[in-house]
Image (cartoon, rainbow, N blue to C red):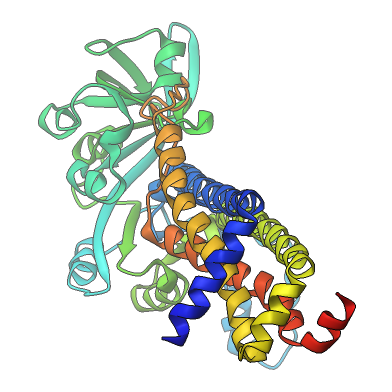
Length: 419
C-alpha cells in the first residue's frame, strides 16, 4: 500500500514538471538509441573488415619455412664439442616447400575434436603471360569443397561456378585485378610460366574479388591436381595445410603443440593478423565509450531537473514529512520519479534504436572493391539492447539518488518557518 502511495506522489511531481520531465526522457531516449545504433554499426563494420582478412586466414597454417639450420655440422663434430664455435654467413637451408607425410597429418587433424576442418593447399609462384609482358602472381591449388567450408570462397566470386575448379581440368579462377590487366573473361585461355620455366595453358573458369588489391592483383585458384600437374609433382604434393579450430583463442597454444608433434612450421592467426584484432578492439571501445557518454550526459539532465524540482517543491516535501512520510519515503519518491523517466526514455530509446539500425541497414553501400556488400553492415544483437536499457536505468538511478538524499534530509520545521 505504501509503495502505491509513494508512486502516486512521484507521478504528481512528474506531472507538475511534465515538460522538463519529457525533455529529460528524450535525452535518455537519444542516448540509448544512439548507443544501440553506434554499437550495432561498429560491430557490423568490425565483422566486415575482419571478414576481408581474418575469415580468409586459417586459424593455424602448416608450412615449411626456408631458414638457417639450427645445428651446424661443426657443432655436431666430436672434435669441437667443448669449443666455442663462431659461424658467420650462415646460408638458409632449403628443404623444399613440400610437407612430407601430409596424408597422415591430414588424417590426424581431421580426427581431432578441436579442429573444425582442414584445407590442403599447393601454392606456387608463376608468371601470367600476355604477349611479351609477364605479370608475377601466385596459383593456389586447393580442395574447393574444403576451401568453401572454411573460407566461404563463393562469397567473393563475381563470375563463374566454384565447382568448375574441380570438375574441369586445367581451369583457373583469377583475381579481378589480373583479369583487368590481361583483358580476359570467362572461357578465355591464359598462359602461365612456372618457376622452372614450364609454360602451361589454363582456361579461365571464374573471376573473384576479395576487395584487397594485393590479393586481387596477384592471386588465382585452381584444383590441387592442376597445380601438381603444373609443377610436375605427385598427387601427395602439398605446401600448406590450413586449419580452423572450434575455439580461435586456442590457436597459439595449439599451433605450438602441433608444430612440435608433426615437425613442421606453424603460424597462428593471432600472430599473423594481430594488427586487425587490435583495430577491432579499439573501434569497439570507441563505440561503447561514445554511447555510454551520451547516457551519462542524459543522466546529468535528470539530475538538474530533480534538483530544481526539490527547490520548487520544498513546501510539498515539508507537508509530506509533517503528515508521516519518513526521510526514506521522500527519498523513494524522488528515486522512483527518476526511474520512471529512465524507464520511459529507455524503452522508447530501444524502439528508436531498432528503427535507426534498420534504416542504416537499408542504406545502399556499393563500392567496386567490395562487390558482395550492398548495404551498410549492421549486427542485430539483443545484448546491445540489454546493455542500453540497463545502463540507462543505472544512470537515471544515480542521477535521482543524490537529489533524493538531499530531499530526505530537509527539515520540515525549517521549511515551514521560512514560508
